[in-house]
Length: 433
Image (cartoon, rainbow, N blue to C red; front, side, top):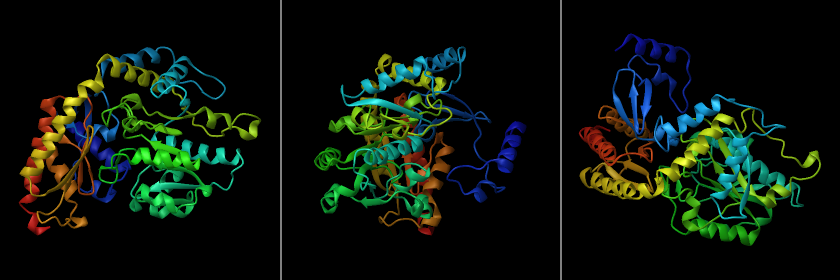
């Protein structure tokens, strides 16, 4: 191991605190983390010179690949002008132009306003607060509840976490958040009193942190119809699914649904800089017009950061210039074929789930029973795959495969070969788990 690698690992273990991480295990003498130092397209290199396929797009953020020249050039160009100016009481060209382009991605006259923030959690926070304040200012203050779905994940800030349904992330803080009714499917909507509900929130087409589980086709359209009938706002969390992940620019377009609030982040800047946007309708916006008491008193220091806007504009250009969505279609089919081959070859692959260029591979014992949770088999598979050139993370015992949209056929094949070898190693000791 190089001296620099040792120094960086030592400093990390002494001072860093990683998200969703058992820090005791991380800091143990036996654990040697990967120190990533460089990226290009779908590849990452560590400080020891090893190359990996970025199999989860750096936590689902990277769309067009690392170090994309078009995006980096736009960031450098903007950096020569200014990195950031306050959006409170000022504006700047790229913020205005980006807002117009994002709204133009949806049908004309639908989502017409953009509120910028920093990340997926804050994009959701904005939507929830707007939905509540809208009711207060339109004569329906009793509509304070939200409908969310079991096992959903919408972020980690307090409001976003309170509409989440993954207990290991949210249970400790549930009493501090919004009042929420949790459902498993749209069939349960009919038992609810809509006069107390401000909005419904859902990840369209597929739930991410719930092991990459797709929703039934038609569910989103049915939910939109119920919201229309009951005058309930529909919030779509497209933090993960947006910007091509499902095969269309936004997942909601596959069922021709337009929400009242659309939450975007992650792929918004192509995976280069933190930035988020919450899109909403003119009707919502108009309810905030008037005196200072009606204004939306919420914001972030780096709202509409100029560098982030530059990256986002360039990312939208890349979609057009490289025909990203059209080029992705055969890769989605190739992913389907790879998943089928992997399941056929590996008795421990219980189920594969796919939506566009998003896949979850659930491992269980060959008889279909789950591995003991404390065996952490999903983590073991990902650790083994690393030695075969694939870098990704599991959700419990579901291995995520979600590489950048620019991934080559050969790189995708490498990912499946790495998983095949990694799972084979788990099979050999399955009886002991």
